[in-house]
Amino acid sequence: MNPGSDLKFLFIINPGSGTNRQDWPAIISNYFNNLNHTVKIYQLHGDFSRQTVIEQIVSFLPDTVVAVGGDGTIKLIAECLVNTKVPLGIIPAGSANGLAKELDIPEDYEKALNLLVTGVLKKIHLLKINNQICIHLSDIGLNAHAVKKFETLPGRGMWGYIRASLKVLRINPMIKVEIALDNKVIKRKAHMIVVANATRYGSGALINPLGKLDDDLFEVVIVKKISLGELFKMIFSHNPYDSNKTEIFQTTKLTLRSARKVYFQIDGEYIGKVNEVQAMLLPFALEIIVPPAAG
Image 1 (cartoon, rainbow, N blue to C red):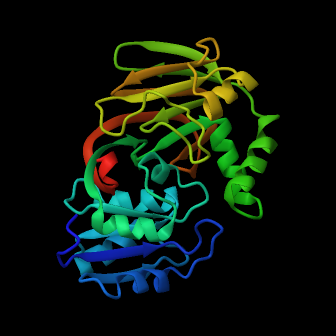
Image 2: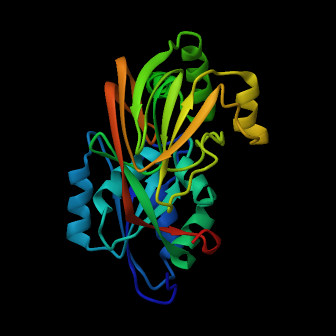
């Protein structure tokens, strides 16, 4: 980005994201007050939709659209920018901010705002999963069930998610699936299966050590057995997984069928119960503003 040029920024704010109730319109206006840029601020309200965002983009014709919210807000706005020349900026304001962490976008809002005018553009791949866009991580089973439970519990933030995970952990049944990859078909029983474009959850847990947002593959992570040892690797040591408990496959397409309907989430948003998941790679479908070191 060129800090000296006159750019048009459209900020889409989700006031319901996260737990930190900042006065985002005031923060954004104050930051850009002495800069040679044009800013429009739109706050999402009630039963908003993708069409709401598209209407704002069409009317303002911004150079950059900035998501102020969590992974769900980012997903909504990214869906409006796929295969356009309008880049996405991110101000992390959600409960977990998984994608922002993946891209080294600072959670400090002043640094994140500064990045919008000093950062670089990075083209990334997306996934199309059951006709929806996925930027980060999608899964079925344990984590998706925790996401659903999290949405029903009072309070937000990481501790809310941890409480939800503990509630579903003891009742989470095994999933029986058949998985068709590029060159093989496998059958497995698992606690959860992750379709991964990126590497880690917003909690910091490294679920996919092979992930890159700009390579030609995505990963399918099969968590066959949950153990303290594997959790320690994911959260702390990042040592190689025990293949008897966790398997990783790389592919460009996926068809997964479950013997029963299972919990399903995309980028931190609970979608519902499904017994089939189809995924494919969308190469270089989105531009995002990132720190120079991550470009």
